[in-house]
Image 1 (cartoon, one colour):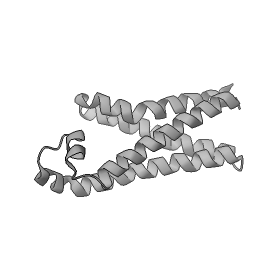
Image 2: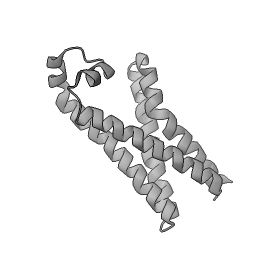
Image 3: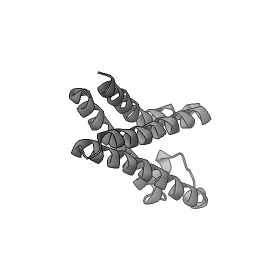
Image 4: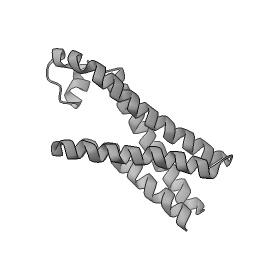
Length: 134
């Protein structure tokens, strides 16, 4: 395993996990705040209330992806199960990337949001794969 690539990939994975924790916080805690509503394109507080259960649920998907990435990084970093850690992290990161692809495929105007959601996990995946192959 190439340690330099593993460190870069792990740092990017940590960034991806933090972004997804932030998204969780917006969707599950701050959903009805005007700034959050604006971020997600919700114009009316009544619409925000209707969408609240969906956003709450979606927020938890993001926190679970972040937790999966974190567990993978801990296992990878402690050396207790490098193979298992990298597998768990890569699964969670791949899910983040695929969620970003689904977002932009479902609404091409969401390219910026998809890049925010998907760039760090994609780069993390590339570097973690390189760490395994070199």
